[in-house]
Length: 147
Image 1 (cartoon, one colour):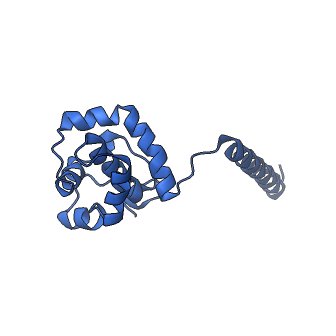
Image 2 (spheres, one colour):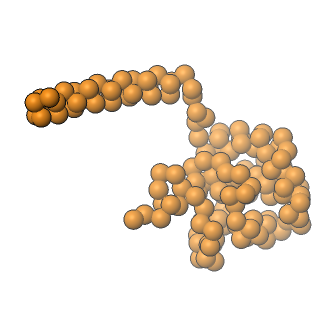
C-alpha cells in the first residue's frame, strides 16, 4: 500500500530524513532569483515565499503552516541565512503577503486555480453518467434475479 505522501492527496512526511531535505527542499538558484524579484533577502517574506514555493513544488498544492514540519522551515532558513523567528513566520502565514505570494507562485509554477464554472459542469456530467450506469446495473441485477 502506498504511503499517504505518495497518493493523489499527498502530505508532507513528518519524519523527514536529511537526504530527503537535501533532495527535495534545497533551494535552487532559480528559486532564489524568483524570490528576490519579489522580496528583500533579509525579510521574513523572502523566507515565507521560499517555504511556500518548495512545499508547493513538492505537493502540487498550497499548504498551511501547520502542515509544514519545522525541519523543512529550519532547512530553508539555513540556506537563505534568515534570522526570522518562529513568531515571524507565523506572522507571515497570517499576513496578506502570503496571499499575494500564492498568486506569484501559481504563475511561476503554472498552477491553475480551481474553476467552479467548468468544474461544476464536469461534475454534473460525471454524476449523470454514474446515475445512468447505476440504473442500468440495477435493471441488470433485477433481470438476473427475476425480481
